[in-house]
Image (cartoon, rainbow, N blue to C red):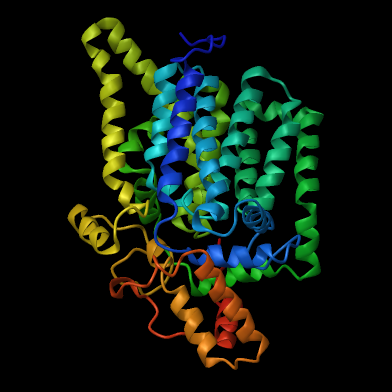
Length: 461
């Protein structure tokens, strides 16, 4: 029932269609990622990029290197620093389609899985800004693709590649540790536990450890500051959510219309006969969901796990529709209708994740839809959701502090340099803070801001 050999590449084949969808995702972000202003974490990453190190208090080191590379290659405009996140989003679409293909999916399965990624508001938002979270789904999806290949072919040597990708994922964001732990537990709970007898799995783990080792050494040398930051964030910053609210947040982030897709994917891995060889992936999601709830993680921390569920869901629905069409040709309309519904639904919610509307128009549009972005932090918000509100106000803060500081002090010169960066990047003409989205009524002094950053803020997690 499922294809065992790859089809010949042609203009309408699976890989070609997958390439078109990936290109669409890339162009979509290129056309929209220069609106509004810098997101708060982007400014911090740019500063870290000027001082490359093997570790930082708030995050793993890769994002600083990405920020440094973006500025060196393209400059410091919004489009420039958001170039690589857009590429990562396009690559995520492609890898998701590849997973569906490896699971035996035909063209519809590949298209359904890829479109689910494209319309999900969470991925639209993350791939719009420079953030670790823009790259994390890609690393997890690549690991999932390699895991599918391992389970499908029995090629244990692929664990070396799995370890390399996982190691890079750890250098991008530490929450990949949760993903790795979930994979280990899932393998123990599934028939794939036999791989623990293979030296290649342990060598793959060694590869991941070797890549991650510089950051471990940095953490040890600095008394594990990231652990302290995370502890303080859980106590002072992160908004606690119940298990039910956490689940509702997942529906919002990946779009309610995609729920049948990823739910079918979870069933494919966990209960279907066709998905029996891939039980470990079903357990991986289940373990991560439980861990995220227990650890009181932010709602979007589970977002990188959905591409491999979309892939399996595409396969399940593709087979289901094929069986219906085999009994009665009239049922063939289900495939194009499903894709159409997803695209229309995705276009409707896209302004909630892509900064394509003027601020006042966006607020009216959000009210009309009756939808609000999930809150993740204990911040006082105005009418804009946090991910948009945090793109405004930084120029005014910089100018206020620079004006009040001594003109001859090093801190003032640093603040003026920051202000000049914003001006060079043409932020001045587009990101003056509208009254409706001001979330900070006072401008803290540099020392107060530093104390707040070290004692309360979790940083760009």
